[in-house]
Length: 236
Ligand code: GLN
Image 1 (spheres, rainbow, N blue to C red):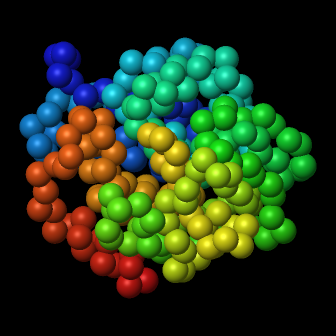
Image 2: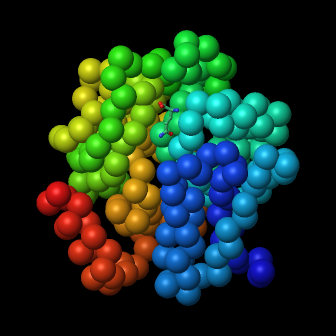
């Protein structure tokens, strides 16, 4: 590893990796390597403290019980919170939005204090939301529709300090009737989209990478297979 190696934190894949979301870290690493950067995935498990020195971080979805273990760990070792404060990009999928919010209620009605990086709260909805989602990004930094697969019972309400990531054109999203999907606050981007989302939305991957490298944009990659996958998912 050299000093210029980009270090991608894969946070708690042992408990927050049930839906293949660890693939997001692989996509980031691969897109960096294709552009000539050294890139390393640093796995942070439940037996490790969370370092604050990495270049970007990803967290995946989880069931309620695993989500609770992850919440406790992130509160005990607040490296992710320190990294986000200095502007390191953080990608939080599904349960991770809930964990990074102020609090969430599990399906059994227990209220758990979250990490407080997102101005968001989550309560269980009557019906579980499962299926394909398509959204139109709200941020000017993204121009292409976002696609993914949702599977959650929690519905997330955003407070004034957080914005949605996209407006739902298909599927449910945050599930509280405001038509929003995901949450963006500072350097943290949360989304309910599994997929993994970065394999299905390379523009979002490059947005995170550009922020991590502190550049305005990255040279495009010509990857016909990725485009084919996108077209298939958008058509489905
Ligand atoms: N346990 C959470 C819910 O059902 C998150 C699920 C997930 O990460 N897919 O809302």
